[in-house]
Amino acid sequence: MNIGTLVGVAGAFGMLIFTALNTAGMMGLIRLLNLPSFALVIMGSFFSVVITIKMNEVTSVFGAIRRAFQMPTFNEAGIIQKLVAFSEKALREGLLALEEELEDLEDEFMRKGLRLVVDGTDAAIIRDLMELELSQMQSRHSSKMQMLIMWASFSPAYGMMGTVIGLINMLANLEDKSAIGPNMAMALITTLYGSILANTTVLPWSTKLRNQDIQESSVKEMIIEGVLSIQAGDNTRILALKLLAYLDPDTRKVLEKDILKD
Image 1 (spheres, rainbow, N blue to C red):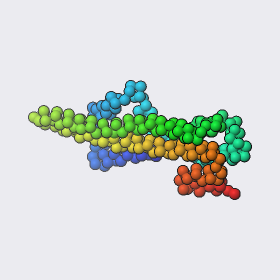
Image 2: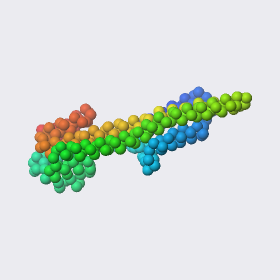
Image 3: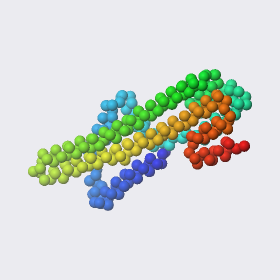
């Protein structure tokens, strides 16, 4: 569970509730609850997203939301240690000696790259193949982020639609003083719902996914660099320095003490 996402969403809604309660008490909170407005904004904007995608991709919207609440682990330190160990073995025993360890390698991307190295594939071809796989992964991630961004862009528009509906009903019944309040309330509440959906949930989730994509892409770029360095027969220390450059300064300092010890 990604605690940051959970705390952020809970905190944002908590502040909305706090504000409503401290302006008009419990009635202030109750007045913010309007089922027709909720249905128009949430479901209406969602169905607009459905228009833009294939039907078999509809459930992937919820998969993207679920991923925003997950804490992916890319194990950068473990990957670097593994690549350094492979480098040492390749320099000591030759590239073919790596083959016996590939089946037990958990990282599929690294395993594919090292398999190409063991098979004697040209470095340029290895880079092209691995970068192609990286590019396709980024494309898949981008499509999921785009669905959430579209949802965030549609929801304020549906909020405005609800506002217009409320104003139309209000203006059509000006002689009925009792209808002015409820219709105006719907007009304003629907706008509020559109803003909440876009800025409190969907847009922050898409940003969270973008950050995860950047992190995962960086790890895969690091693996590409490590695999090609092993194939080129680079000194293990040089390989380690290349890979450590992908880490944040604090993590790098901790790992340097173990990997670069003389």
